[in-house]
Length: 115
Image (cartoon, rainbow, N blue to C red; front, side):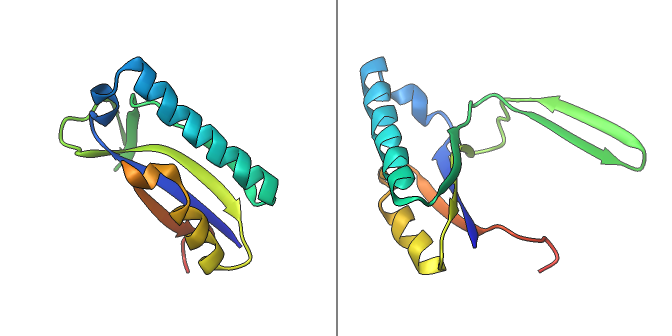
């Protein structure tokens, strides 16, 4: 089964690190990514920029809003898409994620939205 690990960060958290600290954090995440590759469970991963655009269509009207969004306290900072045999395996891999130290790692099964 596929599981998505979402890295949920506090808005503005990245700005609290200087460049060296940011590079160290990023390297830890690259090392974690490499460990997932070695285990053969990584399908895809990437970090996400803080800039975003929201789009919605209601009653034939399209609305597009460019961020950042001041009403949000959190942002999705990145993701790991894993192929695991069990939820417990995904949970253990999430526990090993360095981002759990400064963000929240949300685990979601991937599948049809009607289930």
